[in-house]
Image (cartoon, rainbow, N blue to C red):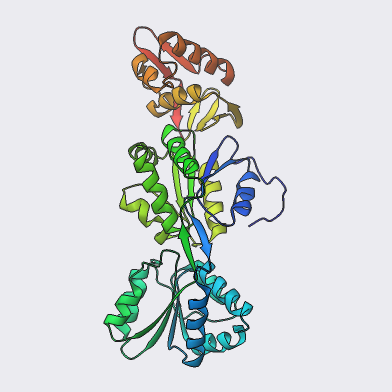
Length: 376
């Protein structure tokens, strides 16, 4: 991932991206802004670090005195935080000896990266990056009589402790941080409403619990059905860093993009490529046309448009050259201006802004259509 402040491309000009993460927000925001996007920050949860250091340190000392056979790392941030707590308490060298002598299993790519960055080998990572696959695999291999240490994610409710105990293991449970409520619930709600209304091009998720809470907020404010529809039509990109993060979206039948490598850099590159080059386009006499939340890209140039202009143009775009009735276009206008005159003014302003008067044809007594040559 580029760490400079230089502009890299205009691939995301006119795009608005919702960021649901609570950590590394400045880094992620800068990465998208370097490609021209605007970012709406709406952390769906907050991370409360080191929720109970006394318990964590007591269990770490227990592991040092009685080393485990297996250590399960479920999150990268949690594993790093555990090492930091041990370091602050003067236990890190003893803990490193324990880690070097244990078989380490990482739930996903980020946890594996944190373990490897600390200098230790990872024996295995489940393909689905889920606690369920990890637990099933270890139980199939046999954990009876084994001592297993489990570093949990923020919610702590992954079922691994109970599974291993039920199959004869002794378990040391380590919760290094917990999830707290969002700092600004109204920002989360506003982001969901914006995603439903078409004023957002992508929503980015870096953790499963945050994805779950954002979806719940969307449901509570009545935006989930519209979000599901927009994502299903490819108008809204719901981007997740890995399969476990995407699970709350899939549970609600919301189409999700999953980063190829399960890394933050891969997620960012995927969003840039998808919105920049992979978004739906049609060929017109004025050049290739694609729609973004802040306007349209036609012939390679971004044309900023009003929310009403974007809404009307999007309906015409989706029709791919078919006639769209005035009633349908009126319904697409913002609620503050649902009248025939407003529609006529919106069409006139669209033609002027796009610089192609014949791009939007008036079909007498029927409505309007976009002058589409072919889909690309």
